[in-house]
Length: 115
Image 1 (cartoon, rainbow, N blue to C red):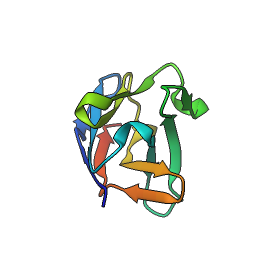
Image 2: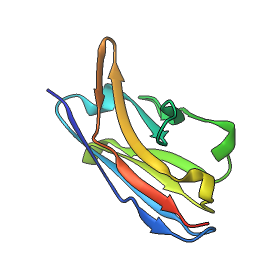
Image 3: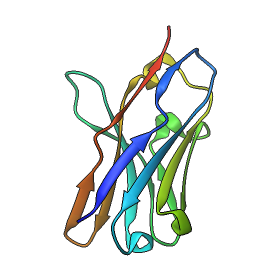
Image 4: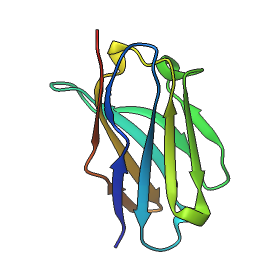
């Protein structure tokens, strides 16, 4: 059974940075595609970034050039480096992992950018 635990959220000013971490407990982390999503109250969960097992990445347009997704297989961890944060980035950020039919979610970490 896989468990995901996010950390690194917080309260920041516009223009500041945060680095989110997703700790993966389970087997075969390197085979999983890792995702970061975010959600604001009353809205659907939004895909932010993806990194697959070979390191290819994808970003939603609104974060391109500001956010970087990465992974360290030796540490069973994925990361989301968020630079130049803006108030519209305020959300609960969730880590997600997928491999074939398996899918797991973390509990989320709050990111608040003051306006």
